[in-house]
Length: 282
Image 1 (cartoon, rainbow, N blue to C red):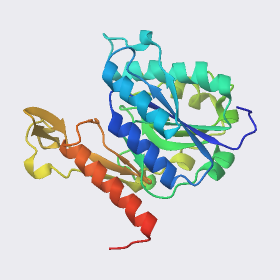
Image 2 (tube, helix red, strand yellow; image 1 turned 120 degrees about the vertical axis):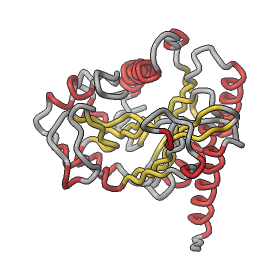
Image 3 (cartoon, helix red, strand yellow; image 1 turned 45 degrees about the vertical axis):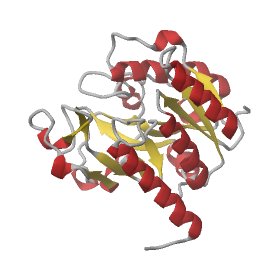
Image 4 (cartoon, rainbow, N blue to C red; image 1 turned 135 degrees about the vertical axis):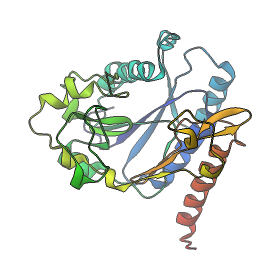
């Protein structure tokens, strides 16, 4: 791709979940109002053969570009945040730097767009946009901008957009670090080294809504989060869903269409697409 093309490339890792792949395609196609291209990445690393086969079939039928994360990125003895950091670093260093898209985004496979979305104008002005996360030892006391403190921060890669020129010469690292989730190393490798980044310019956490639709039946979690987990098929399931600036995040995604969280997300997204398509209001 020529560096000058005014296209936003979405890079979405898909790990044994065809529902998420299908609904990322549906929702981005329906709601993204900037020129875009969807790139899905088979993140199964040689495992879950049937799911990889279904993903290839889906991408072929939908004319979606599909790339594959090498098998050596399975890292069976590492935690999920560390594994994800390795995979994102592979994408940035081996794919994005080669393709040089003018704009690119990382989305978690279960972070879905649900309303009309345009971001290129913001990226042209500020270079990046997404969900600000902070070091766990120095978090702002609330999600509201009026309470934001000046402390280490980064854009969590579950929802992050960049202008390539803004970041291409930085030694970025999407790995987690102590007291931070995946992407936490961006503070030391990138953000702290720039004197032109104002945390407040990127803080849109005021718009986050944390939902616990299964709270009345949730009593399966460890203290102090007992009421954050409910039981399904004799297993504890994390019950939170999150609205985040025009996206809905399933959190701890599942692929079983009968799973309560998948059913909730599917109905939510189908309704969003229906009402948008038909200009329908309740």
